[in-house]
Length: 217
Image 1: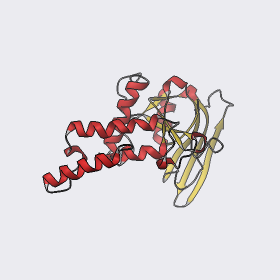
Image 2: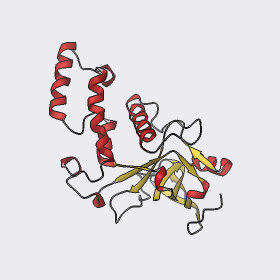
Image 3: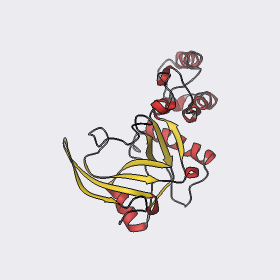
Image 4: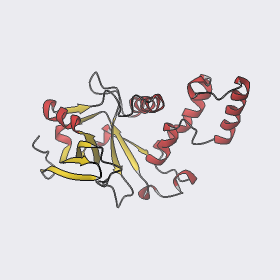
């Protein structure tokens, strides 16, 4: 499966050093709300594509299957995508059975801890719980069975044929689709572009391309 990922230079350095790279802490790992979402995604990956291949892998690596649509799959080298400092823009080929695809737009329901379906009924329960508590509740203060009800709706992010108001009723060929997988291996690399961003300026430092047979790391 052809994917594209933009990683910090430390991931590229790990690839050069060890031949593999993986995630022990997500980029936004210090934010509890995001940590919860990443842990949920890791749990889904264990259920859907299996356990991480080696010990020490806590979280998935993220990539793009379709950044914008089937016609615009590659993410642009833009200020929205390229972080400050050095990074590696990589085109990769990962075995299909190692990848879990999900809708990027509806993934935001997971990030914001809100339901995808059944939201009117769930809103009523939230209102009742907060009225009983006399204050606004954090997500982790909801009863476990109620959180389970919300999180069951999150599984719709894996339904790439889903067409509703949340995604503008667009066909999946016209939507953003993200990919997650446990480990990046040297042999998965098709091309690497080392980028350096300073403020609003993005420069290419090095470009490696070996026509799908890996790159000199």
